[in-house]
Amino acid sequence: IFFLLFLQQMVSSLCTSITTKERLSLVEDGKSLLPRFHPALVEIQRGRRIVVFDSALQYYKDSSNSVSNKDNLPDNSNDEKLPVIFLHGFPDNATGARLVASEILESSSGKRRCLLFSCPGYDLTSISPSKGRSTIDAVAEDYLVAINHVLGEKSRFHVVGHDWGAAHASCLARKQAPDRIASLTMASVPHNMAAGMKAFPKEQFRKSWYMAFFQLPLLPEWWIFFAGKSNRKNDGLRWLWRSWSPAYDFDSAYFESVRRTLSQPGVIRSAINMYRENLGISFLIQYLAVQTIVGLHWLIGCLRGCKLAPLKFSNEGREEHDSTFSMPVLAITGENDGCIDTRLFDVTMSSTHTPKKESLEEENGGDNADRDLYKKVYRRGCSLLRIPNAGHFVFSENPQSVAESIIKIMDKSDLDTKVS
Image (cartoon, rainbow, N blue to C red; front, side, top):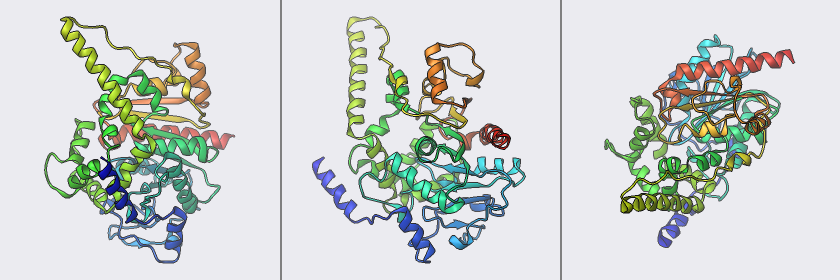
């Protein structure tokens, strides 16, 4: 393990650290180090209304993959509705929201722009070996610099995040730009996930085995990296997609674009570093402790020849909310998510623990303390959409339902803004 850690540091020293502002200056000077954006489904970009950005804010305006620089950034002066920012997670790329963006574009008759940003660390010039650059706060800060560059420092916008993108969007909404975000949508990962894991440790820690595995040096990169290079049917990347969304018959072109994204030199390590810097070795220790307790509980039951009472863990995590949301919030989860247990959303983004509620604002029952906490955290309400027969990749599995819910919360927020 010590040898692997040393080797990992040697690999890190070969990378070049570059900040978001430095990347933007390279673009402005016409000296961008980036090659083309990963071969993605760029046909969704219609008349500059849906735009896919890489981390240096180069974007692709047509199916020929031609690159434009800052001087040709999409003009937002004629926007009739606030734009919507999409942030992606792992293992994914910026085109993961392409179907939802298309639905939103058609619904708004082209009056609302959709901007799909690539996560810092998912292309060559945004890889940083510097410790701390993959934390949620640091990545959210990078996103805000990019958003300011595209829309302006005083612009208002809606933000939609999936997986890690949900955590980054939440940070933007709570800390970085709370007064500028009109609405927040968090998909597949809830706010204050630690509290949810305390409520369902056995189930969620079982699904979170990969988070513990990613704390090991080099082995995760090897597992996913060779998955990105090979054509085997049971490679690591494909296995994650299938286990997280069991019923999803995923688009091969989309999957291959993600494979190519992660196969760029240094990208897979940068992506996995998000787990290392935000969770750390302490998560691996917690994981092993929970699995040991569960294993001993099962073994004792077998030796005694009877079924023991289910394990119960203290759930005090609901008091860990450290900030509030000043905008309407939409939470989206797949009913069969194999990555994040759907019940975590009922603990952290609901006023009660009762599962499968379509609208949290319409629920009248529940504990008063829970309701007071819910109102304190979500000052303008939080709605929960649980999609049947869907897994982790809800944007691709049921884009129509996702888009409809996002459109509702955005239109309501836009209307409230005009009235005020």
